Image (cartoon, rainbow over all chains, first blue to last red; front, side, top):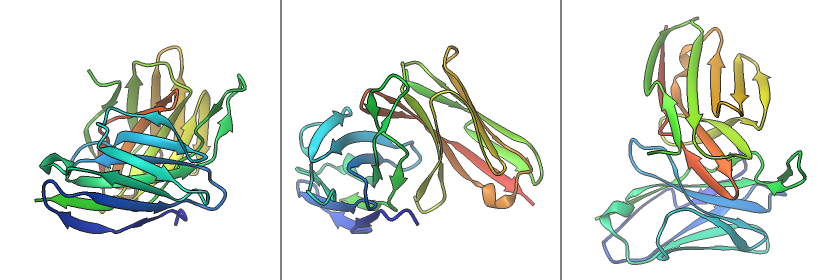
Length: 120
Length: 107
């Protein structure tokens, strides 16, 4: 049990629709990151939010967007769904750590169980 | 070319064997994570490393920053270790993941 919960666990949408996935962070964690994992592949980093601001983004188009709320829970929104968006979507919460050089970076990741999206 | 390469892709071992999974990366990193994913999707963080070596129970992770290489070792492997092991690196505020090593430990 990581304390990170995602909803819904499974959902089916049709091409062109929009979807919102939700993630509640572990208590005290102010950073959340989202990942897409296609079947048989490793996760792909979508983006990360720190204190309600996006502070890192992978190679995903703008129709993938997110929000982080004051309680550090988060949403992933995907517009204009395509068949290739079918995947497991994972979120992870973390708390920043300071490197030996003093820079702030992402700490240990605590993952939710994921939301499995099927686009027909 | 992927920023993170893992080997082997698949690994089958007898219970009790010593296992090594390798991860090489091509970018400058601030940290490297080893993750474990069981069937059904749940991912558990095993280690976060930026230098040296860490040990937790039967698991050992090492990293060589100069060679851009990390290894995950499992001593006295057990069937419950069967899972996919994923290496992920953090560069800036961007994560790159390997495709994972699928480990099966046979009783």
